[in-house]
Amino acid sequence: MQQSKEERVHHVFEKISNNYDKMNSVISFQQHLRWRKDTMKRMNVQKGEKALDVCCGTADWTIALAEAVGSEGEVKGLDFSKNMLKIGEQKVKDLGINQVSLVHGNAMDLPFQDNSFDYVTIGFGLRNVPDYLQVLKEMHRVVKPGGIAVCLETSQPTMFGYKQAYYLYFRFIMPLFGKIFAKSYKEYSWLQESARDFPGMKELALMFEEAGFVNVKYKPYSGGVAAVHIGYKEK
Image 1 (cartoon, one colour):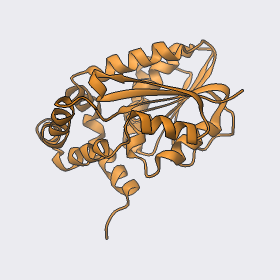
Image 2: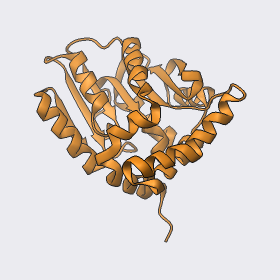
Image 3: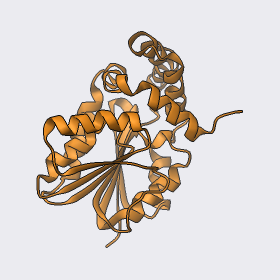
């Protein structure tokens, strides 16, 4: 029986969890750290506020948000891979961060009340969900009026030559890295498929608007191999 996208993604992340952080650095040549740092600067997270990190994985962005809101704030991280959350929980424990709680759940049906968070983020997770728009609508539902939703994700380069090189890298080189460094060629082949099929920057901005966000802005990184989208919920 053919697996659904949700089942397939769950299997992938349960299997690669132990190597996930290392492979992120290898695959992006550590650029994902620079992209996230710039995204956080744009978000201008305030002390004492509440944030939700959807598809939080091993909780790196969750922890960055927790440091930004401080001990008076509150951050929740949600993921549907228990193995990824275990690694995140150990990181949070080792750092002694008390304002973080990690939740096992589904991005398609967030287990939170409407208008609960000042910031809702999703980093390199939207491309892996079965329905991009449904997740954006859920993010819109749980963010407070005046709050922001932020998506940092792979994108589709538009520059000729660069675009071809990007697809070559994702199709052939990235799965090879997965085989060499994580013994997971099949799983990293899937990840390149999800990146290849993900909407471009303009298309995703329109999806943000369709989900109900206003004042949607986006910025490409590294020639468009990744992009951040930021949308606001009307007050």
